[in-house]
Length: 423
Ligand code: ATP
Ligand code: MG
Image (tube, rainbow, N blue to C red):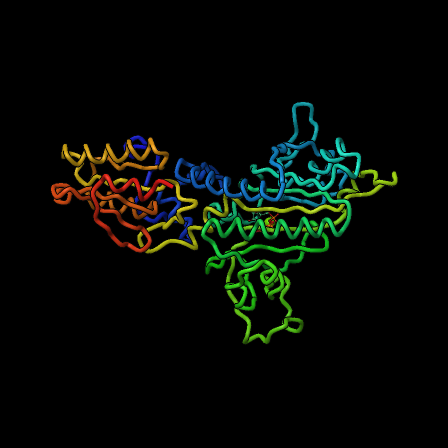
């Protein structure tokens, strides 16, 4: 991709309406554009990151047998009236009427729809366990949309819904999902902190929130610091960590001065809520003896669009974003500092073409702008590797390969570069 053709309207100036670093950097890097309060267009850089995140989620969901579907963003109110949540959901729900004046809504979540789909087709215990997920847009008319896409009104969520025959099966599914979440967030370069959570409006028996530590987080977490270095999932699940909503000094297993207290960004939330929807919506199967059984359900969310911001909160420096390689919008950027020089142009184009042909995602900055601006934009956008092409170095047959994070520079002949990126 040539930067001169690429839609990334970067800017030097910090926007006046942004308070947290991820919001500032996403605006400055030309990743998002606000359309209304809490509603954003996602420009190419951001779309690419969101696709990388989604791909990791897809792979980890698939690994545990969770199957991808697309539920709908527009739902008829009927199912919500049936579950009893239509009134309970309150003003966060965007309510819509169609041309016949029938009540519809924009999905804030899809438990009802998943349960409806299940009851239509699964009639026997042989259809269990079943877990369906989607990655789709949600709308919640948040009372205070803020911090850019961190708390938006329209946002992209991965939401999974599981059905099991009995509590033992449901617990197994829950634990598998827990493990999948740990792997998912780690693959994005994050250190997830799973905290035991109250299950709030959805109601139920078991629940964890997954947080990323950041000073700008909206939650306060109290935890045993062992959780940050816990390597296996059982240790993660059993080490003490709760958010402010649930924290009670009297029942905590550690003294207050032994506990760590940090701010966290909630990037995922898993619930096991039993028969709440299966019973209220009469979704049942017949067991081996022909008895009616209401399946045990869980639901499992990941804030996909929030993650883009959370990753930036966790990984940036004073010059801009530092993308972890796994979610970076491009693998490498080529910075031709002398676009008017024929030799520099030739080498830069050759690198771009040979990398692209090998499936390495490369953004080639071919723009005629100052060297300072070019380097500043590259650091702002945060692609993990920069290939810097300058006149003097090229004369000696070398280019520079710079690591965005460590700032280390290695010099090498252009022919050697590709070997560093081909997997
Ligand atoms: P919060 O407490 O942050 O409002 P929630 O408990 O309402 O979150 P869930 O219903 O569990 O969230 O949704 C699953 C995930 O979707 C959350 O863990 C979060 O990462 C993300 N999410 C929820 N609300 C928003 C929002 N308004 N903007 C962006 N992401 C969101
Ligand atoms: Mg909420």
